[in-house]
Amino acid sequence: MSKIITSENVSVYYGKQRAINNINLDFNVHNITALIGPSGSGKSTYLRCLNRMNDLINNVTVSGSIKLNGKDIFSPQMDIVNLRKTVGMVFQQPIPFPFSIYENVAYGLRLNGIKEKKILDVRIEKALRQSALWEEVKDSLHDNGFSLSGGQQQRLCIARVLAVEPEVVLLDEPTSALDPISSAQIEDTLVSLKNEFTFIIVTHNMQQASRISDWTAFFLDGKLEEYSATKKLFLNPDKEKTSDYLNGKFG
Ligand SMILES: Nc1ncnc2c1ncn2[C@@H]1O[C@H](COP(=O)(O)OP(=O)(O)OP(=O)(O)O)[C@@H](O)[C@H]1O
Image (cartoon, rainbow, N blue to C red; front, side, top):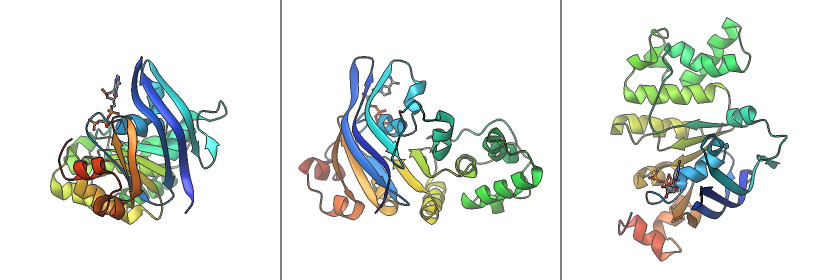
């Protein structure tokens, strides 16, 4: 299976404090990979490496190699804006821009130079359909994004990311602030889109990881403790610590 992102010996320091230690992890294209592990184990820090979001945090040192489609993301030739378009990100708190639903999705498209209304209309409808929000908002596209429910706002944030046609979407606990029905809608959305995108999701919800992901990486104390097909990791983990974590013995 082809790898869309490969990472080798990735370590991250906040000042002198090491947060992750020599992570080697590759991601299969058009799969969903879940990153699980106790609080503070380094999942979000690692996730933020994949589109260089850590560059935005003061005093962070990242070392090791990360390649996207074989290209070094740390190379001086790498265009950061383009990297973050190709590897989009959805956060825990759905925070729409203070604009209309339409303009929320148009934002990234306009930044990418798309100005013609007809093209914007088509791309916005496509992204809102992909995020399963279109039917709910098609008659209120010019209402403020904040008029939506929390779950709808998160689907709007997903549409905003999908509109610029990324290859990989990073999701950092995207449903932890949502009710179970909204969470299930987002899970269904991700599963329905995995032939078009590669998803990497940090989640504390073990059921969610086992329901939607193809691969699961278990982080512990800044290290990658175990990585395998999700069914294997949940049913027959190699490491005792993985089994203990899955059984709620710690974390
Ligand atoms: N901006 C930051 N500045 C300093 N230390 C940080 C920063 N972000 C994370 N850390 C530290 O790095 C370590 C890993 O944190 P990280 O948030 O990546 O873990 P996590 O597994 O995603 O945790 P959680 O599940 O609680 O989100 C922790 O010790 C944390 O305190």
